[in-house]
Length: 191
Image (tube, rainbow, N blue to C red):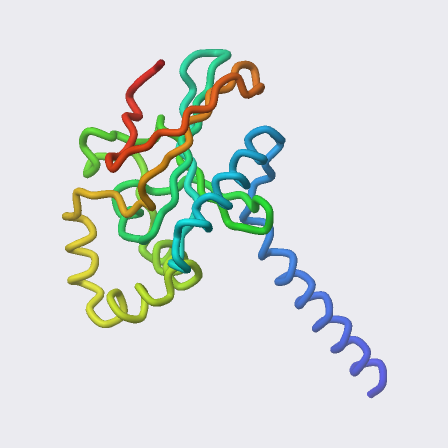
């Protein structure tokens, strides 16, 4: 009796440890301190203008050539964008979820033909975590209509008016452009 009780507690402990560890397994580690610092700065900027609205920092990654890479940082204010501009992985940056999209996986001039899409369950989970009001007030009330309108939407749900465009050479930050705009940055530019 005592032996089976001890074994039961040991089994419960091992199973619960396994589930606790899984929560962080889905994140990649960000190894570039310059990029991490700029994401934190951008997060702080978005937080200062968001007026307590919810947002998530999103980074579009582009390899220009074998030594030059660009990263465009933007604040997402809706999950709608994920239907045609999916993230490919996420990192914890300064305790905040930060979502990354590799430009090579997108067909930006024809969003309906992207190489990758997110599963509906991933979009729902993203919405529940980051945009619970959108989930409860729009998505959950009429899921089919929400999806139809999100897929039809032509405007990115981004926090205006500023994007950061970071250029790296061999992993070192060499240029930081702060783009003041009401338009989405031109991701096709190689300059």
